[in-house]
Length: 122
Image (cartoon, rainbow, N blue to C red):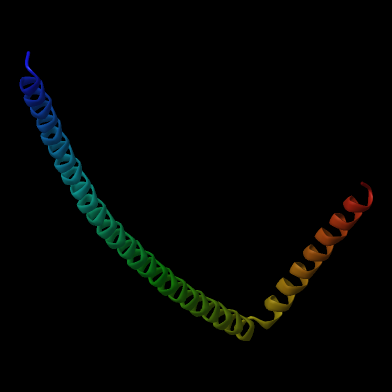
């Protein structure tokens, strides 16, 4: 083999290697571009999901606050109704009311006395 044919073979191999390297670089660049695009889409999707979660949490908090307000209003209304009923009963049945109050007081005193004694024995 002559010196010029060896040079031609070396040059041909070097050219093929350069072309292969160029193709590998282009392929790598394309893959990196695709990865960057995917990352941007993921970032946008994550931001949208975070916004949605925040909005859902805010709606849930507002709903909870409304429910608490409504429940406390219903409780106040019931307590006021029970108070009015008790007042009317006392006006209609004053003797029975005093007897019921005395019995309730005696029962409460007995329960507290028993509780204090049982705690003292321990």
